[in-house]
Amino acid sequence: MDTEKDSLNDRPDQEDKELSKGETMTIPVIQEFVNASKKVIETGKIHIKKEVVTEESTVNIPLNTESYKIERVPVKDRIFDDPPQVRQEGDEMIIPVIREVVEIKTRYEVTEEIHLIKNKSVTDHSEKVSLKKEKVTVERQSSGK
Image (cartoon, rainbow, N blue to C red; front, side, top):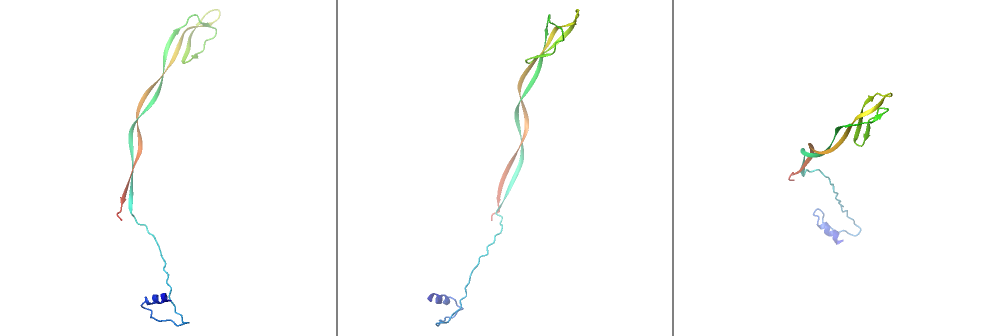
């Protein structure tokens, strides 16, 4: 009970008075509430720069080349009943050149063959090409707050 009395003495608007038995006194009870809110505050900015850079680059590309060497090969004493066909032997194409030979019966004599011989070669070739790439710069700017 002494603590209630002391707390009443701390309040100047209350009189010092003692309560008799059976008497009551009303003491106001106070409660505090917190109301919290938030707001956006700018603390800085970020600048992003993006640029496209073109660089020259050398690209090695193998180039395949095919050429033909022509040889005329004389042929003797090869006579056929039917004209011989073009034939392939490996990389070589053989084209018979014929003439008709008159006998009682017509037959074909090969006088020469044309041999086409394929030559293959690979040469390295450099070509300059333009390649694009992006470069990005990020800068932070503080607002000083």
